Length: 386
Image (cartoon, rainbow, N blue to C red):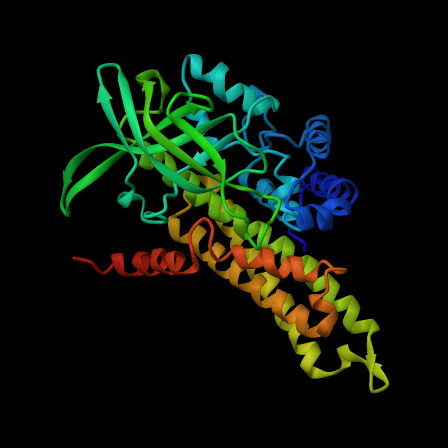
């Protein structure tokens, strides 16, 4: 990888690589096996990340964040994407939606996430409404100055139990050209609020130490001061987060792909069959060539989207193209690497089978490949609408 990095970017990547290799990778096999990051290990990772200035890298410097631009953040996610989300999830990148906090919310929610005192979750996905946000069933009905919330969320990701949720619920409807449209509002809801329950979700085959949580709301009463942003405009907040989230998934996929390519290339150069390295055979060498080409193309799509985001002109299809290609490319690379290693590629002694399982998730979370294709094709067709 060579983006003609600035001196600062090069230093960040080198520092992150050393941190990953020394502090994270030695634990990845064990946390995958157990599905847990030991509490003390999690604290150590977070503390070292705070000391090295890696924590909250996406938030502005004037509130204590790293103040990194989107291109540098893409490099950040790319490097950490080479190992378990369960481990590097302790190097927290708080949701930028929290910048919408106002008044008392700033000190209660935003600042503790910058300093590492609190951890939030982004509660959008529901059992009956994944990528179709407008189908969400969770409601928040006004009762004087309060809202009564009922509903549930699932597949809410976090390595640890969250301190509060950024919850999305519909609070009304408005008329549009296509009929009634739900008005979605974002709320900040603390763990322990009466009527709000959090429990662990089912164990996943991929990213085993990066837990999913199920959130339930039963007559949960919150004051209107808990609204994040403006009532009825939660969808706009969510949409901004979703677009950049897809770029980060794509960047992390590039990191995994690079690690797979390095493993496959080294093995192909050393493993001998029929008197010569298996890399000499086209059945192997062509796989390496395809992986290298996919990696460069995926990297370019990610950096193109990040560059447009820095300029404030990134479109939904820019993020969709990056995620679609990178997530499917890393899947191909993981499969090819296993094929190159043969039976050893599926043994737990090597990281390949774990990277293979983890890569499969990239085509699903933050919008499936089918959703990304829908976004891209809709963008193409919209210019021909009358």
